[in-house]
Length: 369
Image (tube, rainbow, N blue to C red; front, side, top):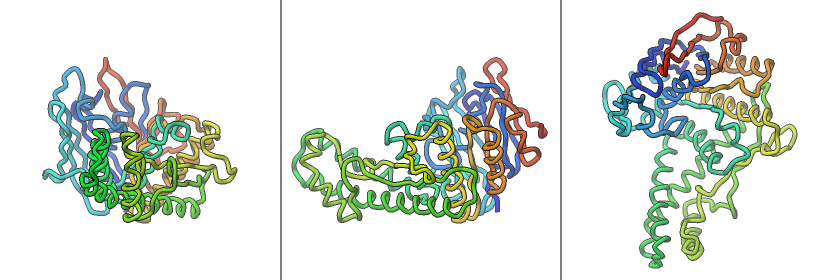
């Protein structure tokens, strides 16, 4: 069973005043000059999963300017659960509303209907920048397996903000902390268990795959000391850490302090020490492994968003990527500056040219080059 967007319509979204695409489950190759609006199409598709999308942008910043009247995205999603009409609407900078089959729904419903993974150029520095980006990458992978992971993360963050406020105000009465720490312990244990389970599934998917891309060994570690295991141990750790947290003015124990370390398995080299090309190949390998694991778990491969995916890939490895995507059966939305970057796909893909007409993006569906 395939998972695919069959239609995508944008109204006043980013650089697109109006765009309407009708596609099938094959990969979608999108090409055009830099700044034409290719990535904006991928961002629109990324909103079909829970969260803020691949750019983590506010609804207000997504509106087309200078009009700034709001925006709308509509799509027909075909997946294991059948066909659903999904719409997103933001008016005058307000948070986006989600409608599924014309009924208002919470974002969390999207995680039960579709899986969307992405690889964007900003992730190329994942292994050499701060831990926050790697936690976000890990949590996106985890969310792809466990839709409830987002709710647990939100509940944890809310309780931690309240606890941090007490710490900054130098509140020392334990009574004020107990309920918040109980909530942090409960949700933190869920977050930690989900993350470890996701890493196990990724490892299994890598071991069972024949791929042209290098496998990565992934380890979840903690910033300063081993993370407590289980709800009870976490609650104890939070209580014992209060004096230290009071001095710091923030919570120093918990899943928000975790980091994800990667190693190029065949070479035994930390990902942070690999070449730019090797780091890109490791990321692609993880996305493909994530997709294979989801396909087995969800009953269909996820929708893939691969922005400027040809960057740092030679012709052979680019062809290998396209072969793996088509073998997986995923609807992969891919961008590049020219149609020649996708010539290895031939009629296995569908093509969209994006042009810039005086600051307005225009989309034209094309035959195979």
